Every structure is written in structure tokens, then in C-alpha cells.
Length: 259
Length: 259
DNA sequence: CGAAAAATTGACACCAGTCAACGATTGTGG
DNA sequence: CCACAATCGTTGACTGGTGTCAATTTTTCG
Image (cartoon, rainbow over all chains, first blue to last red; front, side, top):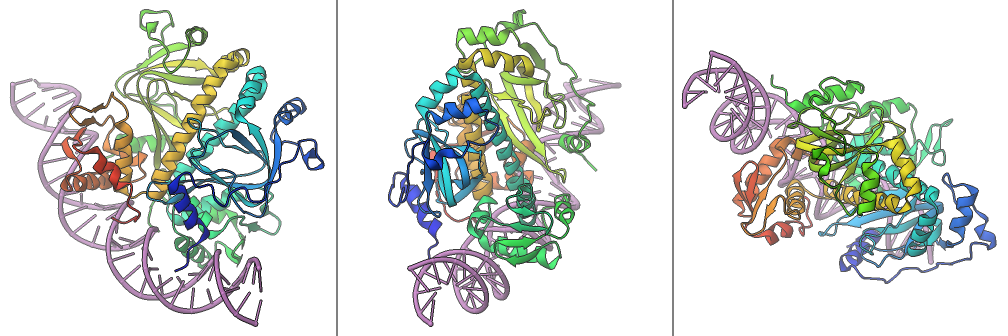
């Protein structure tokens, strides 16, 4: 019997306090170290950046190893992504995993619920994060209403995205869910080469399936069907060509749940 | 052919600027009118309450008639619920409706996305709301970091709830979704009589189905099955008895998606 | 090059969506 | 107060989409 990585994650998540295999190659650096020259992205003014730098620690994670934190842990830090991608997920009582979000540079994650993390956060590939102590951040936000406003804007944005995700999971069939995901990815130049119409998928089929609330097999079949319908071409498992993007969005117009 | 209320809503929502049948019996009152004596709930200090009262208008809606606002409209106001319940929903491109939330007293809704409402808000039964002008609120929050912090806490809370909802829609079968909803409702004393083990359902089957990402017929069948399995008793369509709540939560432990 | 993981394809059962018809409930006007 | 209509809720019949298990192919990585 083969067990995929994330099955084991589920077991540890059910235990809810398992800290094994975490923080393997974490290298905390001072914010003023050479690697700390990267700016905190996402609409932060120079003033706000320096304010955040005062309380932030730059941390890096190796190639997808270990977790930033796991659901159920005590929460002391908020994180913001400098580079790379972080997968946010949560498990049901039955052990199933739902991927809630893929956080891109500029994104914030790790807000505590009653002092503990409700979700798990894991790097997808190499990642650089800024780690902000929650108590010091709240103090700072009290003194800097403008900065707090930026965080609030970010939260409203994340809430809207979660709600869009709810529409995908609640009202779309698997083909439409994939179409929604691809169209979403195409908004990011990091993944979409508009000239060549080539899209890079940064996540595995397992992560994608758990993000879309389905099974990896179903994702594969839906992609195969989309290819036979000439809507896309699978160049490789992580690389697809989308000759006519409007045909993808046309899928979302269909009223019926089946087909 | 019979058309249910919300089918027509879908059509107007697809038009995205239809304002007909809105604001039918809205009665705006000064905050200092007799009806304005009710306190703004939810962890607001007396200071903050009076600050909000300075910019708030008390508005009431009759028995479920009309909408507070519709997706696509220009957004000028934030709302907070004083009494009653508000249903937040959004439509897919194909016209399907997803109910995102049922906002209870103390809840906030109506955050704008690029100046427009991304969702629709409609009263469920009689409702009293506080209407806060967005531009005046942002000014106020700049001057009152503590108040802004309260709003941020509320947003984090709403985000966590949306994420829990994502787990329900993405990973649970219909019986489990209903169990999750019922267990959620049982947390509120307004709806659950723990002594008699009787739960009041404040929403219709249509709203419930759209909230759970399924069809009303499927909800009815799942409830019938739960009753035949002795997990609950339907006293009436809006009233059910739950003799052993732990049997409901036991449903959530099952790993399989089917049955 | 070999082992492990990932991705795909096949087979099959079943949950759930859809259409339809039938009760139950609510509201309204005479 | 009752007849009537409209809406809501439930049940039936049927089909298709999708979850699960299994096997095979492809890719990754040591």
C-alpha cells in the first residue's frame, strides 16, 4: 500500500499536537542581513515597511519540507510571504483535507483563533517569509492606524476570495472548478505566458484536488476530457497550453451541474 | 411553470444593475429616535458605541421583503445587524446562487470590493440594521485604532467561518453538511432549546440547500434519512428534535464520502 | 539504473442532481 | 370562516457525475 505524503499529514493533524518533522531547515535571519534587503511587498509605504521590519524576522524554508505551522498549535506569529508560495489547509474531523488557499507574495496568513492556529501552513517549493510576533504587531497597529487599515484591506480581500471559492465548491462541477482555477492562475504573470498561451501549474494534482474539493483521479479525468474537447493541451503534468482562453470561461456559463 | 422567489432574484442579479423591488418599506430613523435605544451589540465599549452612533442610521426591513443591496451595486454603506437575520449570497456566471452566510446580531456585512458590492444581502424575516457610511467609517477608524481593531477581529472571525464553510462544501456529503449546519445552529440559544432538545430552523429549504451547495430535494431526502436512522425527528418543517446530539457529531467522523 | 512517488486510465457502485408529481402550509379575498 | 391560490416541502423515478479501488504508465529522485 502506498501512502502519499499528505495522508501522513492528515494523521498528524488528527493528533493535533504532533510536532515531528517540522522546522527542518529553517534559517532565521535578521531583517538587516543581506537576504533581508527584499522589500515587504503589497502596497506598503516605505514608512510602513520600516515599521514592520522593526518587528519582523526573515525566515526561509527549503524545498517544500516541513510546515510553517500546524492546526492546533499555539499561535504567536503572523506571516507574510516574501517569495514563493504557501499552502493553507485544514482537516475535517474525518481526516479529509481541504486546501483553503495558496498564498502568494504579499499575502498574509496565520491569524490566530483563540490563540491557536486553525489551519496548517506548508511551503510549496522554496519560500521566504517574514515572521511577525502577534503581540508586537497588535501594539504597532494601535500606534499606526494607516498600517492597520492596510491589514484590514487585506483581510477583506481574503474574505472575498474565500467567498469566491465557496461558489466554486458549492455550485460548480469538476470541469468548471478546474476552469475557475486555471482562469484564476492566468491572472498572474508568474504562471501565465500570455504570448505562448502556456500556463504553469505550481501545485500537484493532490493539492489541486484538495483545493477543488475532489479527488486526484477526477482531476486527471476532467483534464483529459478538456483536452479531448480541444479546450486545452497537457504539455506536461505541470504545464498546459490554452489556445483559446474564452473557451475556458464559456464553460462557466453552463447552467447544468452535469456535463 | 412555477418560479420560486429566488429564481427571479437570480435573473435580476445576472442583469447586475436591476434595482426593481428593492427598498420597499425601508424606514430610516435617526439614531436618537425611540427605536434607536437598542445598543450596537458585539463587544463594543460604550465609547465605541457612541462613536458609531454618530455616523449610523437605524434602518428596518419588513418581513423578508426587498434586498438591503444587490451584487454589482455601488457600495456606500457598511451594515451591522441589530436584530433579525440577513442572508448573504452571490451568484455564479451560470445563474446559480450560493448562500455565503446568515448574519446574526452583531455581525457586519457590506464591505465593498472596488467600490461595489460583491454579494447580495437580503433580510430573513424582520430585521433592524445600523447603516454606516463607508467614507465616514474609514475616517473614524483612522482616529480610533481600538475601534478599527474590533472590526479587524470581526473580519478574522468571518474569514475563519468562511473557511470552515469551505471544508463543509469541499469534503462532506450532504448528510454531513446538514449535521454541520445543525450543530452550528445549536450553539445559538436563540434557536436551540437544550432542555427540550428542540432546534428551530430559521431558514427555508431553498436557502438551506443553497447554503450547503445542494438541492432542496436532496436536503429533504437527507433529513428523511436522518429521521429513519433515529438521529432526529422532524416535528415540523422548521422545527426538529435532536434527542442525542452526539449522534449528529458522530456522522462527521466517517471517512467515506458515500454513505 | 532502480525505487518511490506521481499521474493517468479503467471498472464499478452510488450519491446526488434533475424533472415530475404529490401533499402540506401559508396567505388572501370574498 | 371558508374556498382558493400560491408557495413550500416531500417523495418518486431516473440518469449521470464522481468517489473509490485497482492497475498501469510516467516522472522524480537518490
